Length: 293
Ligand SMILES: NC(=O)c1ccc[n+]([C@@H]2O[C@H](COP(=O)([O-])OP(=O)(O)OC[C@H]3O[C@@H](n4cnc5c(N)ncnc54)[C@H](OP(=O)(O)O)[C@@H]3O)[C@@H](O)[C@H]2O)c1
Image 1 (cartoon, helix red, strand yellow):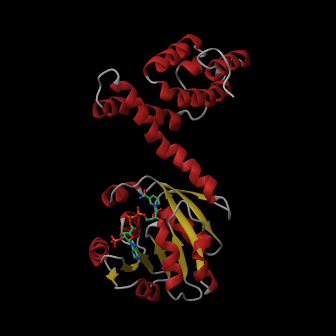
Image 2: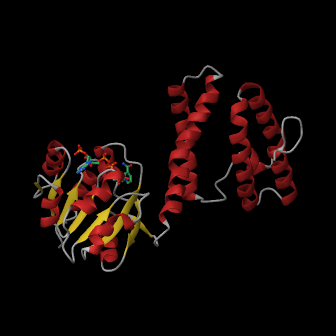
Image 3: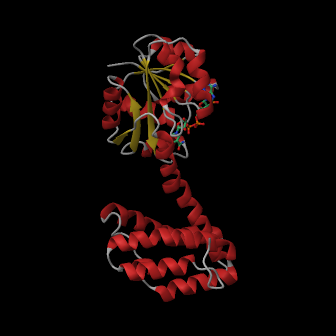
C-alpha cells in the first residue's frame, strides 16, 4: 500500500492520519510549521516519523496530503520538488486542484479531497471524519485511490469537475455556517423575552436536532413543518407585526427566507398555488402594503 505523508498537523491532518492508520494505511511522515504539532500527530499514529521540512515528507511519501490553512497550500506546492508519479492532495473546500499546478507540472498526480464536515478540534475531528461526505477532484488513477480512502472511512463521495468548487462550497456555507447564523438570530429574538443566549441555544437544540432527523428520515420537501407548510397566513402576519415592532432589522431575512420556504411548501403539496401566491405576496409586501422592489 502507498505510504502517506502529511504536511500540516492540525485538525484535519491529524484526524485523517489517525483514522487512515487505523485502516492499515501506512502513514510514514509528517511535517508542520511547529515541530510540537507534528510530534503530537506522530504520537497518535504508529510508524509515523516527524520531519523538519515539507520536502522531507515529499521525499518519503507516495501520497502527500497538504493539510495546512488554505492560504499556505499554494506556497507549499511551489516550494518543494515533486517526483513524477507521486500524488499530492489538499483538503480545501474553496480551492480547486489548480492550486497544486507546480506539482502537476513536475509530473505528480494532483487532487482535492474535502471533508464536508465542521471540525472544531482534533478529538472532535477524529470522531466525526468517519462517515462524512467528501468532495473529490482528481483524475484517474488518483481518483480511485481517493475513493478507496473515503470508502475506508465509511464516507460518501461526490465527484467534482474543474470549476465546480465555488458553487459546491457556497452550498456548504449556506447549509452549515448560515444555520449557525440563523440560530444566532433566533437567540437574539428571545433576548426580547429575557432568555439569555446560552439558555436559548440549549432550548433550541432539540428542535434543531429533530429538524435534522426529519431531513434524514423524510427528506425534502416533506420534512417542512410550520406555518408556511400549513398555509397559515394569519400566523405569518402576526410574526411580521411582531418583528416590525420589536426587531425591524430582522424583517428582511424573515421575508426572504419565507419566500424561499413557500416554494418548499408548494412542492410538499399541503398548499395550492393560490395560497402559495398569497403567502409570497404577504412576505413581499412592505409595512404600508406596498411591494418591495
Ligand atoms: N476544520 C474544518 O472544519 C475543515 C473542514 C474541511 C476542510 N478543512 C480544510 O482542511 C485544511 C486544514 O484545515 P484545519 O482546520 O486542519 O486547519 P488547522 O487546524 O489550523 O491546521 C493547519 C496546520 O497547518 C500547519 N501549518 C500552517 N502553516 C504551515 C506551513 N507553512 N508549513 C507547514 N505547516 C503549516 C499549522 O501550524 P502548526 O504546525 O503551527 O500547528 C497547523 O497545524 C484546510 O485546507 C481547510 O480548508 C477544514
